Length: 357
Image 1 (tube, rainbow, N blue to C red):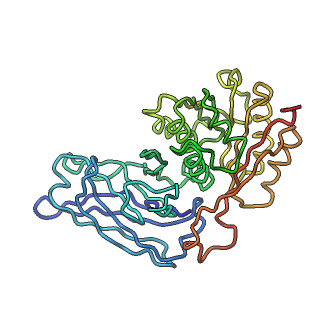
Image 2 (cartoon, rainbow, N blue to C red):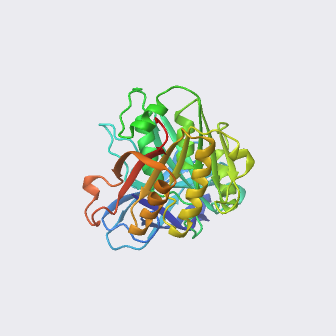
């Protein structure tokens, strides 16, 4: 998966006759930003009113070998008529990125960037420090998730989260038929009973928000360090089924979490820091003591062999693998220029070894 990111906040510069230019500087990179997109791709910049009405658009090309791309779009007087505007930069002209794979639309492999609203007509000439991802998750719904535009990778969407969102979107499709490869998770989601779910290291909350939006009887608790509180609370606004709680794996689990029974615990792309694995596993093991029949759902992009320590520690704690599958976050046509397995995300479920004894 590739991600369009703003290197400079979108900005309006006034010109003649109340018109002007909306400009920014973008880059297209991998989830951690360690590599640039190594292939050519169309890029479309679209200035819209906040209600979606198109004001102006311009086409560009991201060429293999690029490290940045300047976006400059001329706009008329309607860009400063008192209504807020947003800048959408995409590899297509859809209103949201397609994560499922219906026949009529190929799955998106470059995630679009939508600026925060700004209002040149009220002297708000620059967008804020956030970027929105808009993802089509089926059922004629799109999920909007805010990220920070700062240099830190902590509060960004990563590939494993996108892979889990894609999987959940397909399993919870309108057909009502389990279509995935994680039987333990599929049966839980298709049970039609009320579910209580905890996401550990939730970051922006993309996985938990998807589950809450697609499963009407699911209560979700997002949890992460205090630095994730602001972006999480921004994202859960308007989602009454979702709450955020601060949780440091190196400290005692807060009572309002430890006292709950959870049907599922989600961990997405939290194993990149091998030094944190013992603390994370300790938290999971304690949660399993309270909820021995819970299902652990893991999404993990392969980055280094040392990350296997996470699975080994879980097995030592009596939490064993039940189902496993993988997802390629790039389509076959987009795979050129990438090393083998670089886009593979492993998805698996685990349960206490005592379940079923």
